[in-house]
Length: 211
Image (cartoon, rainbow, N blue to C red; front, side, top):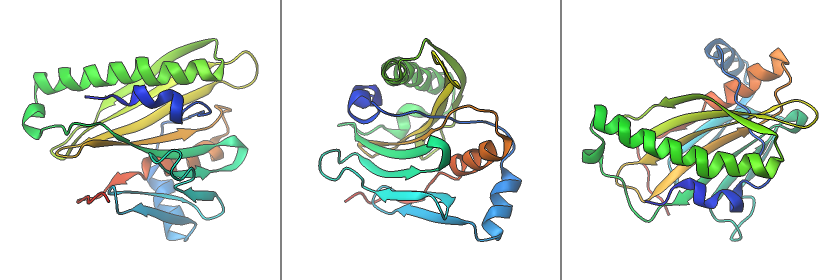
């Protein structure tokens, strides 16, 4: 199976990602109630997320050149999000990932390879002094192998950068959906809350019918 690290150089050369974990549910709900968030939905690959209305959204920004890049979202202060769909060439089978120690081990292997092949490539492209692995969560369910990764990158000058993403491999589909968020880790509480809200709004839809 092709792991997303193999496309790191192609899609992530300029990617700077930050995920700042914390309580987001109340902010998410209140912003939605006030009508401050728009929804982006990709019916072709079955996912959606919310974003502030005044952010710049670019669906399929690189066209045929980088057909895997489905959307790019630009926020304030250099923050940005991308969704990249990678054709893996082989679908994962639900029967191979039944809950239990075997599933955990398989997913851990994919997570470890993604860290080494993708996140380290991003760290090198950033010119970071060091990369520290933060939280890593296996979020797999009966529809997909899914996991979350976060890494902290120490820079020569300025704020550190956190590189994080949610990676989804739907069962019976020969592709993965990768949601990446980027920002400098400056400790601004209001900014962090908005970034976290957008990141955590990412959801896979119940059905997918890729074109």
